[in-house]
Length: 252
Image (cartoon, rainbow, N blue to C red; front, side, top):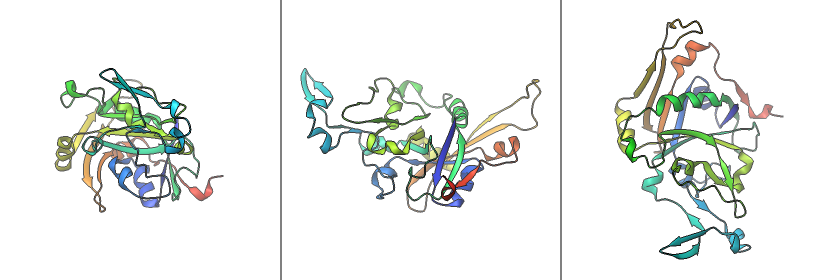
């Protein structure tokens, strides 16, 4: 499956194309102000709009506490919790409407993220505390509205970062996500995490290079935290061609 990463600059597109993926903290997209589609104050929550619940209040989901039922307009989490999520956002369609200020598109493949998930979800911290989270995950975004509620998260808490209101469904968004503690963020800011595996040909002969994936963290010039996957060295060994970059102006 092809995926498309929209970027405002060629520099960012070229960085992604060689195999460096930057995941920004989810709070960035809550706090930033824009009118091009990146900002969403309802990230990591399920929130219905006044135009919805004022017109059809009977469609609101029902909650209960100690046997008392009530209707839910919005459910979410506090900032200390949300800031553990870091996301890399793409689209399943090469549509120039996805992000308004984008000038370039990088063509990617879902199996990139299957590989990341396989490598990164090996135990590294206390797995008994995950409560339905996944350290690394990726999926299509599920769009909801007052008529079509998202499926309950229950034991799949990792899914909460993959839901958005249908006002954004024109983006056809696909996401990859880290759920990372402050401890992990601080640790890999000082010493990047390395996942290293031997790889073999179809004839079971070892290749003369390894699969190497680095995870590091940092803070950009605007003060936003990020986690970065760097698989550029392995990508260069596998192929002498980077991922394809397309100018948005060339999309027809």
